[in-house]
Length: 84
Image (cartoon, rainbow, N blue to C red):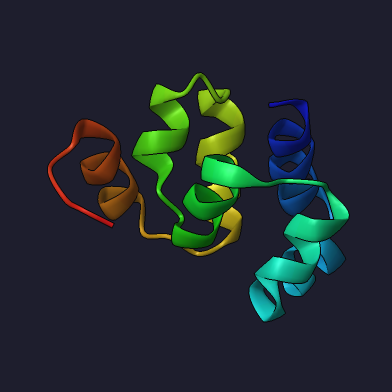
């Protein structure tokens, strides 16, 4: 879980990490050692699954903003009103 938190923080803080993630998520996920369900949730931007698994909601929200996810869409997903 630490690696996911680190990645979310870096996407928020470092424009180069954000760009790299948007261009090639697999390479970035590899570099952070993220595997399994967390990897798939990050690739799918499944914020609800990440939230329910205990990922820091602050980091999730600001990562979503950096990845240009619409706020209304983000909140609807967290509430379970939409599927990713």
